[in-house]
Image (tube, rainbow, N blue to C red; front, side, top):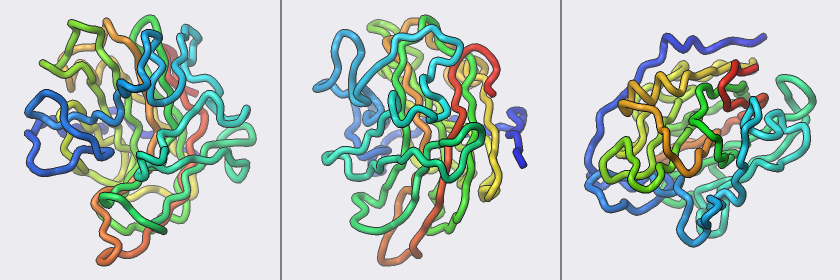
Length: 274
């Protein structure tokens, strides 16, 4: 059985707060601003080139109806990437599985757990794509499924993040070239972290519905206008991240957590998601 998230039920938390001792999401340092910035999702200077190739490894210059290649993972991992790396131990890899699929035979699977060291109490499973479309896409969608969910911390949740790196001289936020919106699919109903260049939209139930495929479909232009006052027009690249994660976990005082999270049939473009 499938369920659809009603976009009219979205509720947003839009207050920008100054940095008050909360370590930045993904463990980054702030930029040249009084507001914390999620810098881990930027293209890192050591990797960036004039073509936009950066931290996620590759960037697609695309104009297809669906900007995301291999959206159903039927062709393996590529061109999807992970941000997991030795210098980012809070990031965890994904697997392509044939255990569950919305359509076809495969999907991306995140196996959430609290085994091993947990740097800064944060752990993130995710699949990531960077693309360079001609115009900012209008819709973001796909399907997810949750199984074996056992909560170990209040900030254990799923989200889809989309961001745009603005072109030089362009900005929707003063002094911030990176602007983003995070759609929380399930797990929390309040802002889990404070990040100055990110707005959260709560798009699903606090507790996940298990053992069934859930559809999501978001109007990016409407949401960026509401949250940031406009739609990115001149930008260098767009990044989308599909995540399962937890924050502020204390191994000595909190129970072990678990969850099997699947993403499938993902969409980014100007049409209607499947």
